[in-house]
Length: 411
Image 1 (cartoon, rainbow, N blue to C red):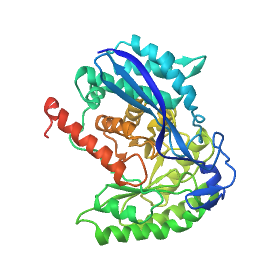
Image 2: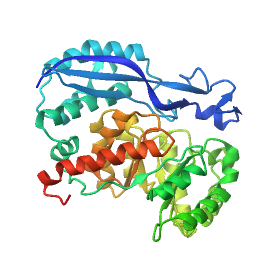
Image 3: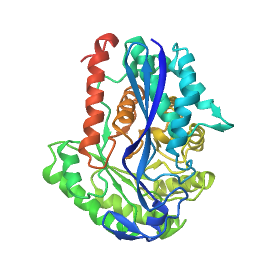
Image 4: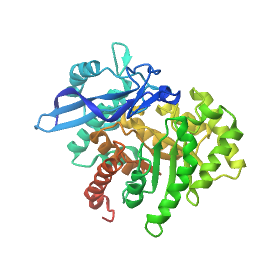
């Protein structure tokens, strides 16, 4: 099979781009929107519809293979690249990248993805969103050519063992603090709520809310259902306590106590504003929590955007898990290698991404999950919980059924 060309067109993401800096600093809420001036470069308004470039590779046997150049919801902050300009990505895809694909040797996904990762046009490295979409094309193309699933291709090329059952999901409940909790409990999701904490007033409400979640699980949960509660603060606690670790520990333990008896994960309680200070601050917070007797585990996300960042966080031992935020890593190959770095260093993998991704990128992520077997895997896209959980659950189920006999796994 050969690629005869590459088409690209502008699309939209599964959610929105949100200027977290402006929201955290008190932008006035107006329904779903916020009034005020954006603070993060690349934003024209505090909430805006995201742009996604949709790639379609045309094979010489008539097949079409898709990849979506998705970005994250809280975009272009914490060291991430600026907003992609759709017209520029489309021109690069239909020009030099299309020509490269027509010449491409399909013998190895890993080798081809590395070429895309290292490629530059006019002296500039490809935008992370374009690398993300192109790597999805490459992985699906190799899988189609070998008549295997994408998960099998990854397992073979990286020496990984395939999962025999779907990976544990994290349900992202977004701004719907109550109905989505009931949905997560009914679906018996092992991890939730990953609630969207974007405003300081939500910090005040979180301890009581955590207590409500704990009570609700016990009221309507199935017998034996024992989830882990995952809270993402997006560094918001720094706006309240700065680097006062005693105050930070006191607050986090209030939420932990209210969440009992269920284990608690906190993603980025504090944000130090740059990579090296973030690693130091998170490490100090982790030590302080352990000294206090807390069982809270910390997840790193902000300032941990690239494969090199992940390796640095792992080496410094500052956290219990790292969110491998797939669009920020660029190529899918970087995601796999970052997950392997975590496991080699004894750090848990939260295979994440964004509510702002698409159905295509989410399905590819499901294959990655089956190959790397993370501690938790984000149901995406969207913040309605049901839709994202459905997409990745069904993709994992059909993929396992497809490869189980070939791999000698019990169906």
